[in-house]
Image (cartoon, rainbow, N blue to C red; front, side):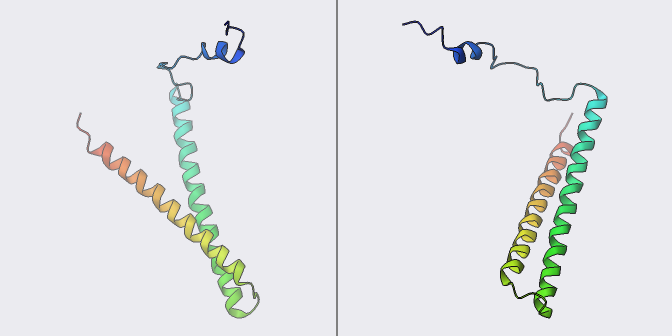
Length: 108
């Protein structure tokens, strides 16, 4: 039985499982700075998005309380989005703080 004609097996031979080079890792100082800048911008975007969800939930609560809206469904969805977003942001912040503490406690 000859299996050399299977194209997917031929393509797998080209992939090295033990490659030490990471093609996604930044190689130069400019690329490293850009990747940190992108990471920081993403984190600030996450905080802004959480703030937007919280403001939307507050608006829905005020509308429901004043009678402008009678949709309890919209109110609950807005509050749940704000809660989940806040929990996610706090979890990311906790992970970053823990990583910082780990790095600071390393002995060289």
